[in-house]
Image (cartoon, rainbow, N blue to C red; front, side):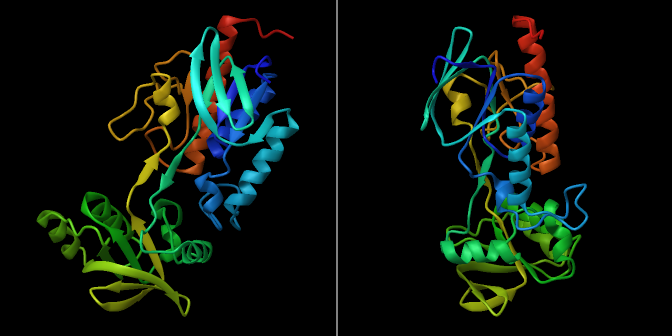
Length: 305
């Protein structure tokens, strides 16, 4: 495969990467997409926030539809990971679990990973995520917890902001701290109390019972309809750093208005770029990135048929 130079290698098969793949393939460019199968979109049991699906759509179904559409136009889809990315004359060389891939351009759509509540086991986490007792995106699904009993798990400004955002959906809100910290500035504490948000103390354990999610807070079992962890996320920008792309202080890949990084031929789109972590936004960036890649390639070589 190393001798087959692709027009574009896309790393990451979420909404951004798959949208770009569809665009690029329909530009009659050769595209290989490497996907580790860990898109956050695939964790959404049912989204009602994505336009065009009034009854909602599961994240797994949306991803599968996009994969089929991409392959319909000739995208080579491989499941695996990238071990190393190097820049070279005329493009890039990627070492993958399936071998090496050489490409004239690379789009990083590697996304981010939510930090999970450390006191939840894998089984409970999967079950709670599937039935809405555990939620990670109030912008996506805050509507679904309207007037329900909701807890936020976190500390500092991130937890403050998430709790205040959710206050526009329900008056029954409780903030609990993760076991390792109870950090909250006095000014933030005052804002939460003024908004009617209860500050409950440190959470030591989380379990599921009777259709609720139960937090052990200061030795007392507290039942909620949904829990929002506000613990942050880890940005998958290591490959960008390997080839010298500039990153923000939080590790997001810095791009221009056309999704270009500072490294010629390297582009980024979706949650790995600083911006709104939403499916629609990721798709838009994927479309912009693909069009930029096509036009930049056309400056280097003729794309005539």
